Image 1 (cartoon, rainbow, N blue to C red):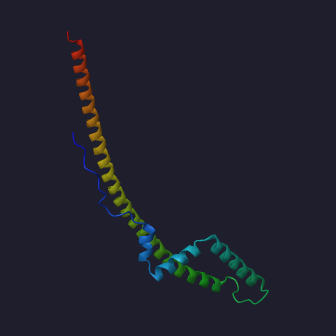
Image 2: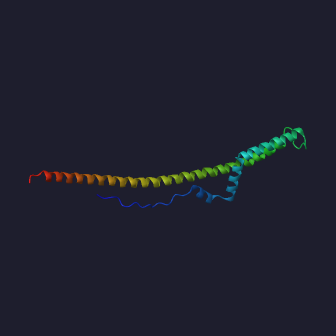
Image 3: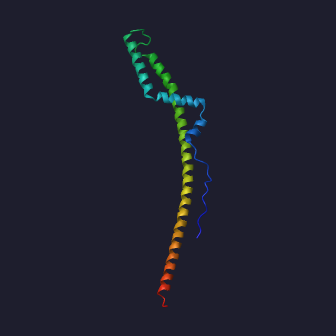
Length: 155
């Protein structure tokens, strides 16, 4: 009867995906991510909506100065510029998120491999314990049978 040796953890510690990815970000990456975060917020949507309503209202009623009369060519140009710059910046942020997801998936795979190795070792140890318990039970049965035979023998 022999038990497996003591299990040694010989793998690197688990890495924090956010920390790994944060170390790789450039200032441009941070700016693009911040820009995408702002543009994807309710604050931005509400602010932009208020500004558009004010623009249209002021130009339709001509309360102040009629700088962009209907059909609001300047407003269309402004929104086109905004869309032309916002889309690529948001796509850069999404590409970085996809890259982060790939890193996270790889790290998850490594963790799964480590866990699988440790589960294998635990199962080997449990199997060795089962074999030891069975061997002990067989010895006890033989010992008990020997005692019964010794007690039943005529004196």
